[in-house]
Length: 304
Length: 304
Image (cartoon, rainbow over all chains, first blue to last red; front, top):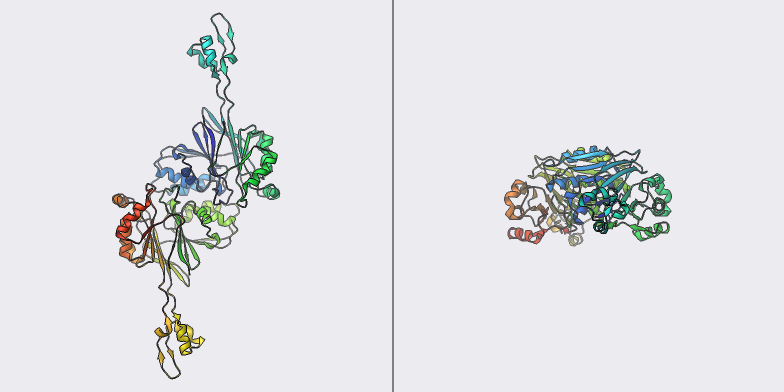
């Protein structure tokens, strides 16, 4: 039951020798979501041996180039690989206008359709859901309209206790009802309550993605209690004024948000190219929120 | 007096873990020309410690994505670095239409202008010249309109022989005339012929770039005698039929062209992602043209 985040890129607007611009792949129960798609994303997908064919749903937070310039190359590669599954892109409505000329210019046309779903920046919305996973977009606060995303497992049904099954000789036809919460009545009329028959399902896991944004407390209600939070930390805390001006966040601000939202773990990234020593940024954040980790390209963060 | 080629990317349409799509920087006497600009070019420029500010003249051979998808990111980075020199792009006329929406969408506008110069695919043209260097475009044969480029030093004036200067007591005011070919007449009327007074200048150096193209003999007249030729070799020689069909070249075909054009050295690249063993491709080409070398990202080829 995988729930894991792979960092493809963790630089801010200027890539460095060690860091590509923002891109991540989140595997939730074998659904592979691409979150942002900076230049070089397709190269990182290949290097990290992820499977192009699986990554067909894409979420673009905002339309600064370091978050979407990798899309034409990725789409071209899908086409050259002969893939045929449609691609679904949740993004600001302008995206299609920006990349459509390059897509239409591709050699042979595409063997698949690309569906664009516009984001809304005024309120939170469920923008994708299937039987096991739900994705919500919510507004964050950057210099242009930007969304964060929350990826969450749907609550699972309780598991049947094998011991109880044997003890009470429960027929198979009753299992689904019991999973749905029913009690079981023995032939002699005794009611065996549901909690005796079941083992509660694991708590649904969740991942929240917040970049680019300034420190913005309205985010908290959307990410409350997340197992994993990726929050931008473009600057160290001594650059708080500059961060505010450029609509970015500092180490301690990201850590404060993580703490107030009661998340389990914070991953920081989107580091300004000026920082060679990322450890110092992590140390700053840990003063406020000890469970802070730095993103490096290629890192995998598992939620268990 | 540098004349050197740096390979930024040498893959064909699909980048691999080791190879970026096509891009090169040619340094001719401290003019830095960028030739093609596949995705990730700006990352390679940074990795190889080339200077963005110096690279303001760009040549795009054709409009397949692996030859131009890196432009929006590169232009964005120029802007973020605060560069102010205009950028000059020689490319198929459609390029501006394809990338203009992304450029216009950049955050703060640009501090420089971008000048687009359309290529012609019917005949060879001098498309850039200054006092020391000349660049010629010429048609090659691909599935869409494509140009090759020849970069050539202009002929230099002869050097004055110091020995002759002293021997004949030549005044400084006469030097320029002698460099231009004049003889020198002694007071007694004796004519000292120019060839005694001068040392011939080095032969102008040249570099020819041919990708993407099928084997196409009309190229020969444009690249004759070049010191260095980069020619695509997408396939090994057993794929000759397929190469023809896809408008690409095989190892032995590229080597044959190099031989017929009488170039000094051939660099092959634009390898299909299917080839893990590039040495085998080089060996094949060397059967026809021994001075063949494979391009690897980061390689530098000097012309002395």
